[in-house]
Image 1 (spheres, rainbow, N blue to C red):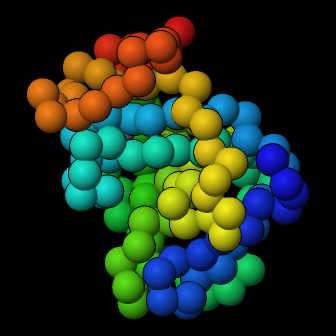
Image 2 (image 1 turned 120 degrees about the vertical axis):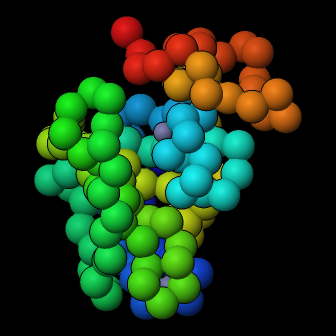
Length: 137
Ligand SMILES: [Zn+2]
Ligand SMILES: [Zn+2]
């Protein structure tokens, strides 16, 4: 993937960058990701938190309990509502970003489906990818 990864929200108030390659790319089908995306799942790109930076604007956060540990804080643009960032207490060294908000979203390639136990019948997954009922591993 071309570095830095740059992106932002729909209205442009929030801009961010990651100077590191993704650690993993996946689709999460959990209920929280369904609600946060308004769709069947969320496409997620995990990057090292130290490499991630909001370079313009201030995110607003909503926290929801995580089955792994503590809370997951989801950062979104308070002006346009676009989901931008996830920060899980369970993995404090990572930042989770959304490829739909990348300036070049074409480089996303999902490697697995997680939380398939929450997936809806109308959700369409790539049968070739590894599936995990909840968290991988
Ligand atoms: Zn915005
Ligand atoms: Zn999820």
